[in-house]
Every structure is written in C-alpha cells, then in structure tokens.
Image 1 (cartoon, rainbow, N blue to C red):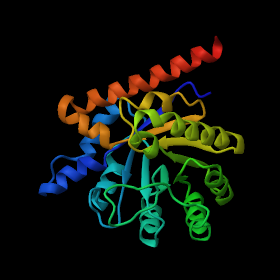
Image 2 (cartoon, rainbow, N blue to C red; image 1 turned 90 degrees about the vertical axis):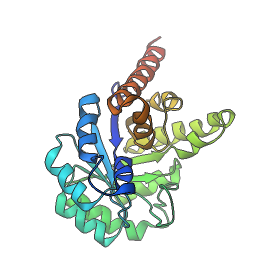
Image 3 (tube, helix red, strand yellow; image 1 turned 135 degrees about the vertical axis):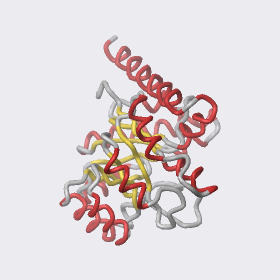
Length: 251
C-alpha cells in the first residue's frame, strides 16, 4: 500500500468563471499557486478543443509559473498532441471529449480506440511525458491500457459519486477490483471525477491508488470558504482514510 496518496487539483473551472464574463479574473494560475500552498501535489488542466475554460495562454503560464507537476488533460487529436509535444508537461492524460458535453462523460474506450491511441501514447512517451488514460474501472480497459504502453491509468469515479448512497457499495467494489487488477498488471493507478468531501474517503482508502484528481467540487467549495481551506480539508480526509486503512491492515 502507498501510505501517501497524492492530490492533483484541477483548476479548469476557475477559468470557466473567468470566461463567463471575459477579462482576466479569476486567474487559474493564481489558483494553481494557492493550491500548491494548500498542499496539492500537482495541477491538472484540460485544454479542450473548444477552449471553453483553459486557454493556450493558461497552459503556457502554468508551465512557466508553477513549481508543481502539470497534468495536461487532452483529447487524442493531432492538435492536442502538437501542443503537448511543444510544452512537454510532466504528465499527459488522454481523455474522451465531445463538444456537446458539459463535462467529461465516462472513460476512454481503450479497446475499440486502440489503433487510434497507440501512436499518441507512443509519441507522448517518447517525448518524456508520463502518459495516463482516463478509463472506466473495467479489467478489459486496464489490459488495453497496458498493451498500449501507458504506464498510468486514471479510473473514472463518476458512477460511484453520482449513484444514490445505497448503490455506492457496488460501484466502490468496481473501483476496488479495477485498482487491484491495475496493480497486478503493473499499472500505476489514479482516480478522479466528481469526488466530494462525502465520497472521497472510501476511494482514498483503496490501497493501490497513488493519486486522486479533484477539481470542480473544490472550486465550488472555495466560494464559501476559500480555495486553500477546501483543499486542506480534502487533503485531511484523504490522509485520514489512509491512516484508517493502514491501521486496519496492521491490526
């Protein structure tokens, strides 16, 4: 078990608020700096094809102005590949993307998209980036990610977060099974999407997970108590879940 669970903070929706009115406020780069001060281990930013939130200039400034690793979320397109190769962030996470969706809906299908994804994964890896695939918590998807040569997977936690509480145990079991399978086949396992203060604990307790990526909820909570406060509370909940799990394993 990895005793320490990394927290990546997604700052996309700081840019969403900025773009709703135009101008330069609030600044997502300032949010990234605040996230670092609050205990984030990395920053995630998704440059969408329609530029609905993060902009090309945001990516350039994040690369220049923050000390934390940048996880660049991207669709598997020629345009995004060229941008990633130009900036060479620490990590590139390939995600599914549809223009009509409000947020990322479900995981990437690495099975049917294998031939399209393979050259993208290879070129990103050859350029020195840590490549991850955002996928559903299904062994067949994990096996495809391994075959593609991606060293990291990020499990989509949306279904677990969105179902009624009495249905969560089944979705949590899917995540646990997938994380265990990832460990067995030699993949580094991350998770994210829709996690909140109320739902993060059981996911953070999954021993094979190395990193959680959380954004929209933290930005929303920042309206009421400040960004640093929301990140510190999430960090504390993750740490407590790990301590509890470690205690159970050693008892």
